[in-house]
Image (cartoon, rainbow over all chains, first blue to last red; front, side, top):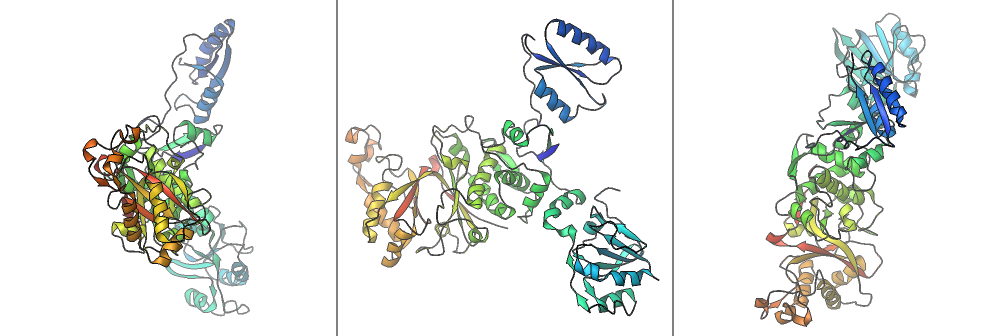
Length: 91
Length: 482
């Protein structure tokens, strides 16, 4: 991981804003992010089945722990591989 | 223990060594002599088991001991009593070592004296990282993480932090090394940078200087450049917002220019010299990143100019027939200064035949008249950069800068009826009310004659200015402080 110092006046958030939601999922790759809460995977398994039935490509990801933000590498991998992401919270 | 905490040294005698030091190798017998009968601890910086045969031998591989205890030379011998250092000597000197340790007949087979070697903890290639690890960082800028799979250069570009060319990633270690270039505190506010009028610290300037590719010794010039362009007089906001192509042109005077290796000669206004290329760029990156001045946003230039990436050069003082341009702003010759001039791209001016000062002045006047428009006068300043092949003529004739400027001004005077709107079938021009006046091209002190360029070439160069005075910008000259 590379760490740099912000060269700006820091008036804007360091995080890049989210892209707009697509109107349709057709032809898109959907990331399913399991935040590692119990049974979240069962919920996502079912979502995956439904998405695949619709002919969509699905990529699965998992946060190491739900108690911390997703690592920057994981966020980058999701952003690189997917058009949209569904993050599951379950208990 | 936190890396910034001072590690406590063991009681008794402490010696810091490295295997890659002939003096340390030399004194191994002395260390063995001291180990028997004394409380001795030896810390090695590079080889975990050096020297062999010492009972209390420890490894200072991360250099925490050496850095915190300011070890500059190996071997260093310390005496620690009740946790405090009471004596220290560096290198090998039998008399010193005997007097500190109280042991006589030390290393009798060795020479009396041998200087030590540099400690790894002060190795220039490591010092910035060590400072970062062990020092208490005073840098306040937000830290931004890039993923390891992310290309750093692309990420810097994607954030909008570059001028389109690659930048050096501003890591903490690089910025810390950059800050070594000035005695000013990282927290000190240098200026409020237009257009956002964001307060800009020395640290923020250093970050952008790293990105531009500056070396630490350039930083004082960058700081002075930022100060100069962020004054109300210079009006950086207006210079950005204008549809005209102008940008700060920085001219460096004083011994600092040669000390840091700036180019005032061959290709002085061109590429190839690191200081020239990066100092102006650093100032522009500060305007972009700290001030928020970006093309297409507040920067509305119709054309822009290649100089907007950065435009900085030094005056060729060493063989100039004239005093430095900074003297026009009241600084004595020999003062380190930056002059910020709102200028456009340079254009070359050929006169290979004139050999007397008056004919050269006529050539200059004929060309200078055309700046922005031949019918627009008094509203625009200019830099006239005179190369040595031309300046020789003025030196030999004894023409001072003022003499040359006065003569050019005289030669540019034209009757108002040639300049007013509509004259020559051109609507552009000065107001009709000025028809009866005879007017020179430049306002008093509007013409900035500087000496620079390569030794061969019967040329000079013109850098046209932006709207001058209250309506636009006035050049600003600032002293460079360490």
